[in-house]
Length: 489
Image (cartoon, rainbow, N blue to C red; front, top):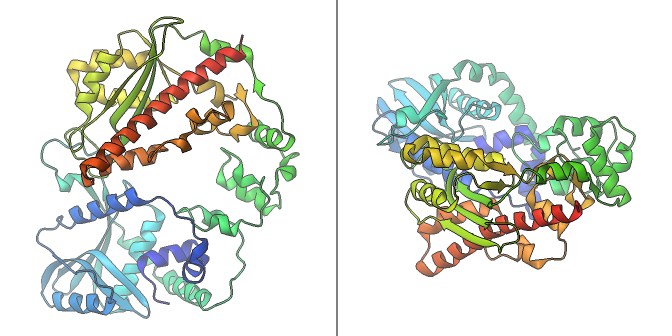
């Protein structure tokens, strides 16, 4: 098998991922990584400019052509070459940025992350191995990653946007193990019959495995991997002890919240409601009462002034509100136009829509508070009104997070996407699956980002879908609050 740097790192995680990719890819689950891929592409292109003029080896499905083009370019004494491609003993790699200075070479692996992780070290070490094995004098290996502290002001400054971390010594230390790893992977791939490989931490880290559902098909429906909140290391430890099913865990010394989920699902228990504690949450609420939910997107490269890499940028909100007790429910909403910085117009509209000192409800208020603080930090003229909203936000999630209201249908989660169907199982108007196009947060983010790639008819349809999705988020809070009032009467 011909390895690449991505296949090598996957093979280190678990050789069976590569085997299933080759022999049984039909059982693979599709994981939504489109935005991750788009961010990586944009970051990679920007990083190519870090060292001045450069040339790019064009992609070709015929890898030999890429290697040939690389060799032709490297006849120059000084060159910054992107996607420089090499092969040694069935090990292929394309180096993101290769800097050649006469007979000395520097490797730069570009990552769209804001930190250096172990898997990145394996990646660059593999490239170091291939180039050194070919006789190239590699004097430096580095990882280029985004600087999370960079705040854009004016023209994008790529030298401040990126951090460059020298990992040469680590790459050298890993050289002895790379040959062993590649041999182990190649030997595993020679098997045409599927090998048994037990579940382990490598099923989840460093990358989510698209074959976990297939590899765990022997487990009972109610198994420890379905327990919400339990640390992976704890799950693996219990699994290795043979404690897999909910029945196995009943007498184990585990957190009471985990045991509660197990018992409720095993014994089909009735809802647990601590009326006094739920009332304490409700007693803090007053009118006018506003239900607020933001939708946001993240970009690796900050598009506008006063943005950081991967900052949550709000582009939409929904606002249901009741001005006085027993009055009618009203609704307002905001959705930014495409291809503009959405923050200023959103902030201006928000302070118009929510009066000072109003009671504001959010579900998981830390997110809404973070968005508002970020807006207040860049719009000084709106700061007082924004922070007034911020300081009057209360959290509707608390009774469910604290398990003061819990049902078996919540499956250990306090996410609104679990709580809502648990409380209203037969209400199609509250079912996110019945929405058009946009059913969850990441779909909302991706849909907004992709508006610029749509024709007018498609754009109008997606904008309507975004509005209805966000509206359901706040209407869901209205219904949840009504339910809490009912059960505490």
